[in-house]
Structures are given as C-alpha cells and as structure tokens.
Image 1 (cartoon, helix red, strand yellow):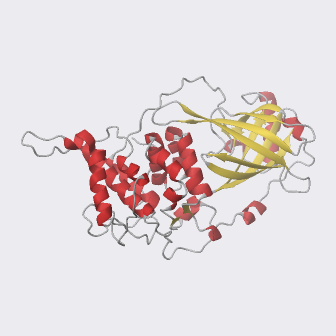
Image 2: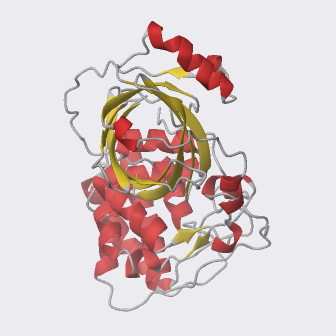
Image 3: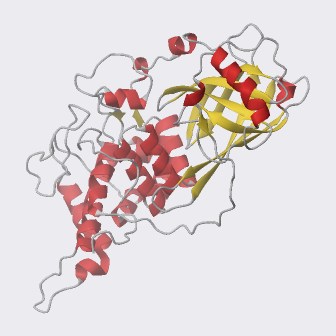
Length: 419
C-alpha cells in the first residue's frame, strides 16, 4: 500500500560490489521510458538529465527485482503479476538508486551550472533563492564518502529519509530544522559532514561566498573590559531576538572558565519540537569561546558544529551585571549568515525585578523589547522515543535524484513536515 514502511533501496548495496564502471549517455532523463526529460524546470537552471546506459539498465532490472521483494513477486490467480503501491515504490527506489550509482561509479566530473550568476552570496540558502546551480561531483559520494553514504543510504532508513527531507527543503532554514528534529541522527550528521563540509561533493562555488564584509558592518558595541569569569556557571536564555535561532525551548547554558585562560568552554542546550510525531529533539552543542583581544570588535569568537556542519560566530556582550547579560551575535555557516541577540539570567524565567533594567539596556542598544520572544525553560522530562524505520514513498524519488542532479526537480512548497 502507498506509504508503507520500506527499507532503503537494496540496489544501493550494489554500489560496493560493482567490478566495472557504468557509463552514462545524456543529456537524457531519469525516466523509466528513457524518452524526453519529462520534468519542468526547477529552481536551479540548466541541469542535465540522466539516463543509465545498457549496463545501468541491467543493474536497474536486477536491483528492482531484489528491492521489490515478495510484494513484486506475488501474482493474481491467472498468474499475472500483482501491482501495488508498495512494489511500485520499491521498484522506483531501486531504479533511482541504480541510476545514481551509475553516475557515481562512472567518475563523472562535477556538473557546473549553466549561466549561473557570478553575484556573491552568503551561503546555500541565498544561492538557491537566486537560482544558482549547485556544483555536484557524483563520484565523490562513493570515492570520498563511501562509508558515510553506505551507512546513511543503505543501513539506516531514518538517515536516508532525513537526507531526502533536506533535499526537498532546498536550503530553507526552518524547513531543515524540522527535518533534523524528525530524522536527525549520527549517521546523517556524519554524511553531511563528509559530503558537504569536508569533501564538498555538493557545494556553492567558493569564489561566490564572501562574508568578511558582512561581519564588519553594523557591528554591535561590546562592553569594554568584560570579565569572562562573570559567566562562570549556569545561565538561562530567557529572551531571544531571532525567531529562527534564539527562541528554542529549554536553553540552559553552562560555562566553564579557568582564570588566565584565553577561552571559555560553553555547553549549549536546546530542544526543537517535533511537529509531526510530537515530543522534542534534544540538542547539546559544545562550543569553545575564544576571548577576543580588547581592541577587537567582538567579546568572543566561537567555533562549533551542529547537524554535521561547522559554524563561526562572533559574540558581543553589550550590557549586563551580576543579574543579567545581554549578548548579541553574528554568525556564518555553509547554509547562511545570521544574527540575533539573547538575554541571560541566572533563573529559568526573567524576574520582574530584573526586567526593567534589562529592557533599558536592550533599547539603548537598538533592540525593540516587544520583538524579543519569551523562552520556555520548563524543560519537562520526556521518555526516550522509539526510533522506528522511516517510510519511503513514491514522492521521495525526486528528492533522491535532487541530491545528485540539483535542479532536475521543481521546488515544492514544503515545511519539513510530512503529513
């Protein structure tokens, strides 16, 4: 039946047993009929379609039989094959997987976007919005990140579903956050870290990314001679200014400072609601805040990693005393640039006795107090959710293709939640 639980396409297991490369002929479509592209232009332009060669078709046929399993092997009373959505989804997954394997094993060069703008961008999200075509090296997924690709695409259906979810988001931050909330796991982090961060199997042309000037503009004014020892211990984020980054649930932050050290260790916690399945996704992010020289523009410079991708941030302590700290920040990762501010107190909620002076400090630094969200630090206990196998459906096939041939499939209106 449509929407039944399907394990990762078995055909991908062939990826590690092929003895000879499979060639590609194109530009042609990833379509079973092999005729015409049959796909409307996507948000990326000028991407070639693919068609597996005779060797690829043979691989597809054998793999489709294997992946279809008993569902495809059942027959009607007259001996004719019984068709079902389940067998169709399995076969489609096998076909797509085989075609992608053909692309990778053929050691094809990276596909450069045709006629893409040379305008500078801040990261994946802005590049996608402006119609840019990602550089993709399909062979890299196997030759440089083979272990991570196998663990994600073959061994872990939740990791595969997470990758497909991210593909459908096309760079949207809120959408991607929901994908991680539902399907985030160590295998997905490792796969993204290898294919996007380290090996750049998928990338925005590096010459188009320039964020140095952005960090120099509209810099918050930090407090002079800030004492990092004043952050020692536990603080709670009780107000946040950027709804995408500052307003998560349950945000106790712990700091550890050794007198005389040039850095401050930070243990950042947050929860992301799972909009479909319910409950929360707990995150613990370790950061090392390097103390900036007094003459630099920032109070701290932070480097860390979340969702398999690294980030760089500048923190500016702009106001505070023993009761509160008002911190502004600017940050950058491969996804985007971002900025915001948050208010720390020693208690999970903002005491009325502190709110007045915190508001005065925020407004003195140009912030509109009514735009700050209230962070819920109730942090109710939750039982460990059972991680069941993910569901693979017919609609996932275009998202699988999109990882290896960006722009082949039109962008969908997607929030990161599968209904």
